[in-house]
Length: 283
Image (cartoon, rainbow, N blue to C red; front, side):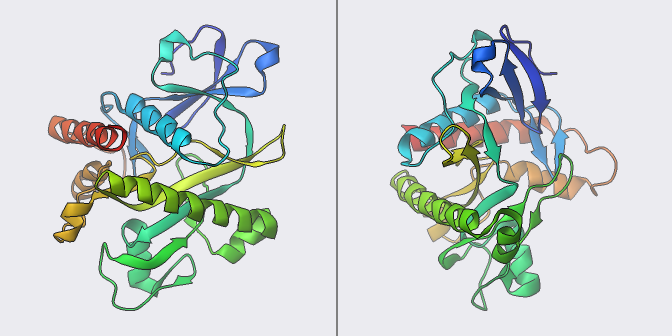
């Protein structure tokens, strides 16, 4: 259940985040984004929660917002309520695009499955003979259409993106996404990490009309990080995210009915991955 917060009222809950609006009329243009400890996989929220996951997600998102030279949704017009200190962000409301802006520098995840079937990802033709975890000739923009809660996002072509949001917006989302990915990859390398892929979400700031980066950014929920030394040694599957959860669930659930409860060791290992990524990037 979403926590009760003095001065704010709950308006929506996603798989991981809870959204609140202010009780004060002069702050109606703001939204309070609270990252919970909930964990999801295969579009289902699982039990139990991952201790301190929301704090780790918020810490990394705010760290990246400070590092990236792109407009973001963070607002300092209101203080973070004491009830959610460390796991919340006060943000400007944006008119969000219905597009997941996915950038891939390496081939893995759902992109690997699509490549195996078609030789391309989201309509982007790739060289033949790639193996799982290989670096791509250059990062590619492979957008997805954002599905309703509980539904699967749909990988779409750039041409379909233009149909949905217009050519000018599509070009700008692609440019921004590739720029942020390049900048973030350089910072990740300094921490001994490879940013394999990630997804961004953008919206329009109604006050300025400017396309603005929102939601979470470059967290282990939205991104795949690998140890560079492990990758060079040929290890391509041990990532700093909830892949442990996905792997266990895939081996122990046929995706029918309710998912099983995660074992304690899987929860502990996942929490360690989140904490280690924060340490590596921010220290």
